[in-house]
Image 1 (tube, rainbow over the protein chains, first blue to last red):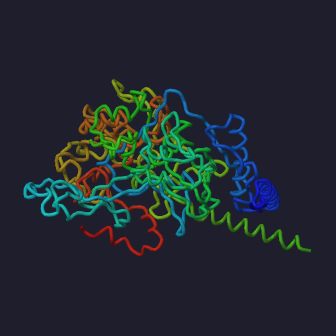
Image 2: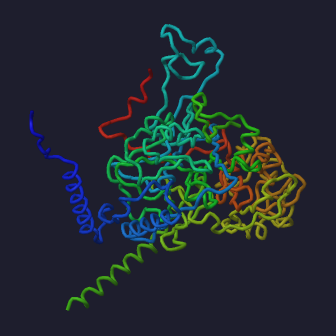
Image 3: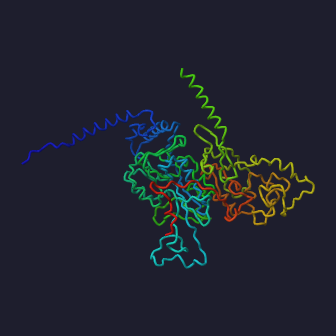
Length: 335
Length: 253
């Protein structure tokens, strides 16, 4: 019979070393807390240990926002506001986009970057809106009998009256001298703010959730960067910060919301929030305001007099991939 | 010792930056090139009135959506829904440099003697060719209308409706709506056209009027033959790391 030997990794010794480790890391953080540009150095220790925003009490939320305001103001050299305005009663934010009016100028994508403090530059460019250039459908007399599966067995895309296997599936990187091009249609895609969002279902830490007034938001501090939500999203609406975001000080928008456009860190997912920092204050999202053709419309779905309600009532409306039962609050419409 | 040398340098830098700021006021256009331009300036600490695209010169972001606007004023109401909220527009009259002159110098209604007020198309030599090159072939209306169908025949600083009532240049929708009724209806309801400001149906909105997005003298734009003119797009997104070209998108498959 063997004598019991004390294991070198007992529970007690583990706790001991863990304790000393955390103390030393705290000291290290304190040593780093100088007037530095580096986000990690400016982080107060409480930010590392704060809880899930949705589960915080009102005081904890206020403290978390004040901490962030201090850090961002120091990093960006201007007075940064981190707002926490909650959802308003009787509001369900909805969006409508006139697919026939879109000319593919991409101003919405750029306005979104100006507003929402995304990373920019060659190394890591993040845009929440993507405008796809598509081939225009053609319903001409001589093509009436084409477009059905022949030879290939399955239809691989394109429009019904153009032969299968001879179409483009949509261009992201088109760059002509002038838009709209002849024979092209454009389709902007961003987060659809689903009523039953697949991304929320898969988040293992429940840091992304649907707010009471509609938008699906992320608590960036609680995000662990597993990117499950990105693979669950059927609309390719989410973006990941693979490296430290590059946000120039002078271009940073100092009016932010905790769940919206506050500067993100490396290793977190981000997405469209219907410009929560603006829409909660009553203002149109940035992409709605910038659209030169007025194709983008935004409003309260519960208000029968709002622009979106009127569009849904009287125009031809469709939702992207409606068959997935995600119930988007983003409607495409036609005149 | 150091301070006196330091101070002039700072002053010099300050002057240089000031001179730079004076030298090039950034002008951008709001919806289409050639209409409603704004000059970039600061309206608060860290708050510019507009942010512009460095590539195309288009406004991308408004610091204050109601900057320089006035109430839309008396519009024919009936079932128009802009009465619920507050509607404002950006006046255009003060941008039209010759407008006060038009009514006084040439088109007073009496001078010159025998001045024709008929709506029939005739050739205008020397005058107005910057706006419409060949006045006998007005691109708007496919030959069915002419200048005086929209411009008041005796008050040239006004537009005209179909009962010869003058209309302000700030409210062209009253004129355009007389032919384009369906679009006008959608516009009144907020379905057609651009507006910025507050999204609530009872909120304040700045309405963009017809001519801020459409050029009334040339609405067809040659081949395109549709409402909105072609213009330069913004930069394409950066290609993913390691991808050299986007040729894969252009291959038929």
